[in-house]
Image (cartoon, rainbow, N blue to C red; front, top):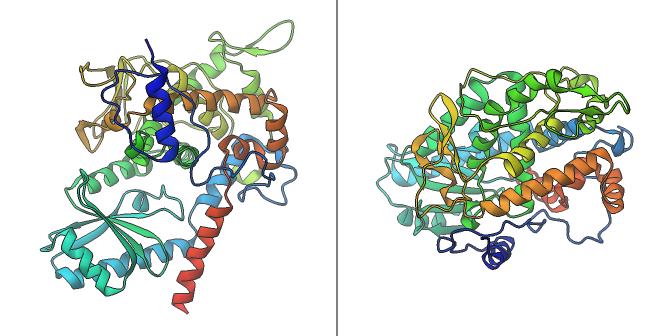
Length: 447
């Protein structure tokens, strides 16, 4: 029996950015979380403007395929050479400062998305410190006196103590922790699975989905385990697991299960998916500079117990719109959260029966950490019921936008913002201003 009251309380807290105490509840009704975060639209009545990634010279946005919109979005979100240079300069300045304070034996290095490339230009930088004779609390005072930081927040009572340091030059934040080895292992694991041992097409699918879904979650304040959501690290492995275990099935079933009805010519599959959508997506033009990424059709997904290695099951010729729909459908409707676990080793991933624990609610996602197989990364995402329901709703919304059955207001909005922009539900002027301000401040310091 689901209770609506805990779910409603959790939803209110997540939308407000507040943590909740959910362990006392065995389960709750999952609810859709609407846009409410930093990049959410200011109001439903605000004027509709094209998102900053939409090209001005490519015709009306409704003529673009979802695939092309994702390509434009990822290109826009990718850091420029200058933005990479300013982040490297910040890392070098901070490293030099810490070594000056603590001594030459201290090591300081970046980890996480800053290294793997799965970051936004305004994202903070995760760094770890090792072999330092000084504690974080003492280091806080020294950094403050140096004038390096405009602000320092000490979060020393957390499970992983950290200093959140705002650079006085750029305004970017550095999250500094004491190294326990996991940060570097986790970074190496992402690079191995997503970059070093992935095909070009597989890498493009994973990186594109991560960048799109990070924004989708951020707009809804679902992108942090602090309030019960899923952080970027968990999201990366959810995407990797889907790409390795489910995406190949879409390709294998595409030609075998697609037929046309004799009366209408409508594309159908034995699993009942509405493949008119895929037919429309695949008929839309793709510009020549991405023509090598041919379309792929969706097929059914299942939780068959199987295992693949990092070098297996590399998808080819992927349509990114189809991939996004497949991910949302899988984690929003098909994955068996109550009985199935996603288990990673250093070189393989498989489905397994979920280990039952009296203190672990059935709605939690069970997914092991490739950098430490003893850690279940989903155990802290107590808002997973809401994340799942939001993915389910997002799938239905995206399907309606693609096949033209969305509401009149949504269709009107999509004519200006594009399908992706309308579906994300964001307002990006603040992001654009922050990005430009970071560049302006760094360049003024350089001159």
